[in-house]
Length: 170
Length: 100
Image (spheres, helix red, strand yellow):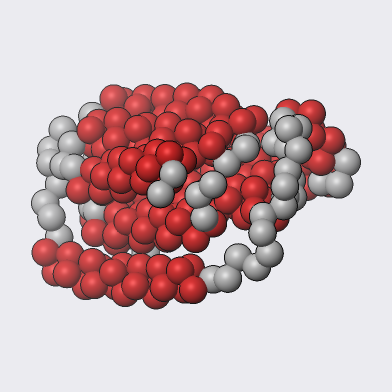
């Protein structure tokens, strides 16, 4: 077991623990903090997989922008009352998810990676190569993504806009 | 170098944890955060395969998944805010306006 595997196992353990904290902590703010930890750990895994550009984007977009949005909504709505655990669904959901995991994990363990991994160049995953791929082969999905983001902006403004006097105390 | 299977198993475990969160939590914000967790597990699979196959297509796919996740989070939180204005709760079990 070499050093890279040891580091991966440490990161994987921390990632599983913080994911469990996202799901099982009671206070919403604590869940959000655990999610930030999980996203940062995933960003480190990305960088270790020769995807530095995507890792940096992960930190900026997820751990930065999206989580700030979540925290804003949490502070805005202030869900102070702790939710009751829904006992009836608890067991069924955990059993279903364990079954899903028990299906996926052996499937991925048995997967034959085939040939040896492609020996990649130094440039693999650099912003240069990523941009050439993004604006060359995948330029049409890129444009569609821009339309999607525009729709999201307009939709968020329309949804969150306060109607005049119709919804009372809000 | 770490084998590809390790990454796939890790992402399967994280995805399953996200499914648990969506199913058992009764707070819409935490449900949305669990969905983000599942999306990230899939992103990890994409990046691991991109590294293994030496193709940039996986990293570009992660780029698009991030854009969709951002849009999903924005719209989802806007819906949560407007639902909270109407019902004063974040419990999805209290949202039964369309239930017969």
